[in-house]
Length: 255
Image (tube, rainbow, N blue to C red; front, side, top):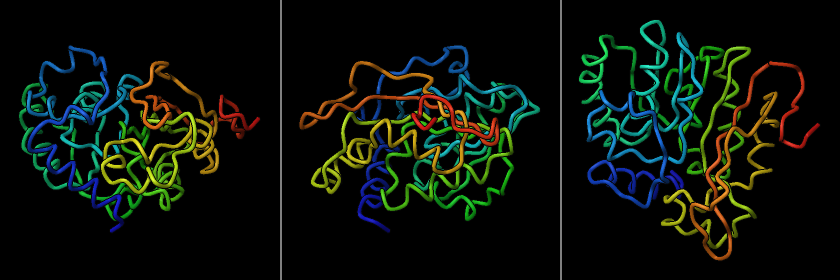
């Protein structure tokens, strides 16, 4: 296990026990979907966007770094009883909260279509996620937490699990310039969704490099979430499609 992964696992284990405000940006979720979700899940949710608003009824959805399950529980209502939602997370304490609350949400909405699996999001085969099995992959402020040496593998996994025509809708943190190594080596900054951030261009091109088409920015917060050592960190939501058009046109700058 890398130092960055250890720091992340330890910090999020603590954040599953008690809320930590520093781990999340303000996000406006549709309140009607929050009504059935226990407060414990909501207060221990950490994210920077709402990829669930781009989901469709009947889809099979995979949430990477699902934490206590908030996005999964929102997604379960959006995709409906004919859809399915799978959450993958590496932290036992987060999964315990998610699994304990899943039956409560299911009773409220009248059906159970969510399951949680333990695993690393760059090793989805080990979590049992098959090739070409997912309609939409979502993630909320988690990709930046994966060690830089494994980010290429991570984006490849997003592509592998999606069906042809499937989409990745990812909310994450980007930086306005490259993060220096000294900051990358700081476990507090890394686990705080700061120093693992990629630049916007690098983030978009990572999707292109994995084979995605139509890579586009759905939302970019103009006001920085944080500014550290002169580097601005912004929340972004990106959509990328597998096998849509045979090209990479979008705002990735590759066309």
